[in-house]
Amino acid sequence: MKFTITIFLTTLFASINTVSADENSDSISSKVSGSGEDVVLIPGLMSDSRVWQDTAKALEKNYRVHQLSIAGFGSQPYNPALRQHFTQPVVDAVSNYINQQTSGNAAVVGHSLGGFLGYKLALTDTPNVSCVISVDGVPFFSSLVMMTPSFTAEQAEPQAKQLLSSYQQMSAATMAQQTKAGMARQTASTAGQQTIMAMAKTSDPKTVGRAMYELMTTDLRAQLNQLSVPVLQMAATGAIPAAYRSSAIQHYQNQVSGSDLVTLVEFDQARHFIMWDQPQAFIKQTTDFIEERCHAQ
Image 1 (cartoon, rainbow, N blue to C red):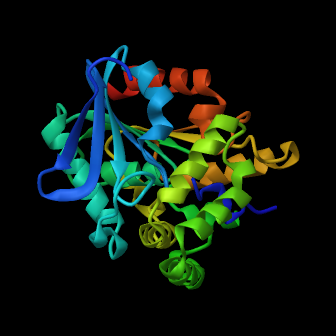
Image 2: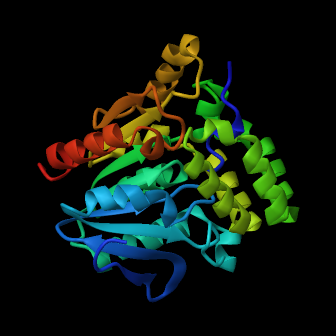
């Protein structure tokens, strides 16, 4: 059995402030609430800060929570530059944001593509984060999708180029229709499915296509031995038939076996949006990891 590409595609309390991410950047924006140690929430593909609303409400009781949104995803206006180069400009913008708007030692929680970006942040020469929690995002997306540990970025290139070309010509309506076709693997939540569709309808296909291309052709696994901060890798296996889950979780383990600083935890009752399908378990795992591994350093 193989995962389908759609597994990862799609993927107010007091005093909430909206701030620009960086005075020199139009790549990200944020909503800030709560007080305490900083926690930065990064959404995934075609998602904006709406995916984190319930999470933020739970965390802001004890933390200062930053809900980020990326240009071109969901309700956010696109940035033409991100249609050409996506990953590094966004990582740079988030890193600058953390330096300028937090204590400079924040916990980063990223969903899907946001989790991959969290790994990139943690692998910078001088990471300005205390830890990363990756919510069903992995160091090399294509290998997990193919369920083939030996699969390479070079092997992923032809399909990635084809998808990139397709998304350059695609309308938002067509992209939303494709998103709808894979909805069952995203979340069991009816409200969550409606939110995903709403975000897909207003996302910029060219930005989405560029982000997908770079996600599919970037393999971070060999760099994991350079990690200097702890990472919690959350794996969603609730959309996978029970008979295949042990195999699936082994493929997640293969993704993160390059570093002893990565802890893998399975959510077998959750689909891709773990924070919607197992919210209580998600919050507990998140806060326990932050307190025990992020702030204990």
